[in-house]
Picture 1: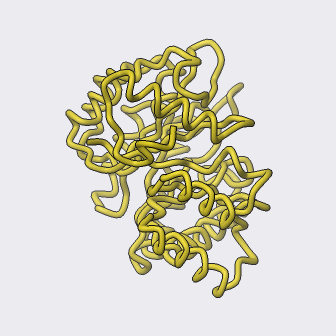
Picture 2: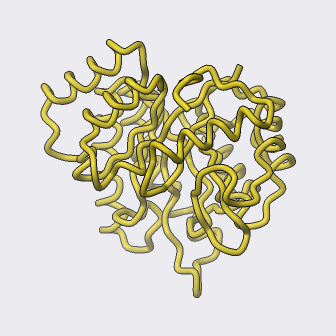
Length: 277
């Protein structure tokens, strides 16, 4: 049975992380991807005592934070500007420390942001991103945290082939892939074939809905992502972690509940929050 994790994106403007996770555990959820985003979960200013309290509340509920994630609007690990890359590395250093304090084994990493009008050649973006990861990897290893590089349409490695090539260049168990179904579907990827390509690199898997015309992270059923095919491909790849519902919606509780119902209607029986929807 496939476990489901809930990403907290939908609560970033409304609810502090502690209140959010208390509510979600009351609803029966037990796996979470925490979004680092003030006022929800600040990157800076969360005291050691507050971090201990958050971890204690999660563990007391028999739950875990499986990953942390930081929206990419304020950092760029593949910037051509040295100062921007250095500032971004410093941000991820702090994110790694936060993940370690919360007991999260993975930090999701968006590999830079590219100018869609005139992006740099692949060799340049690979060089910049490699330098950033080489700075971060020892910090992650020292804290027992891994870096899951995500496929994002506007980022340095938007497709499975380029993402695979980059991640395999490190040959480290602490560097893997965060594979996002909506992102891949939006750019026209074959989800079954490309999931198989990345099988041994999968560390975090994101699921939401979108069309190929408008990029979204909707509740399941609002787009045309082939959800059943994708979940089957993830199972065939041997990935044993949770499917993380990364759904962005003004009513996140309802969106998550609807998505769980959609998964059950397709024949999948998530063990997490089975009675929450």
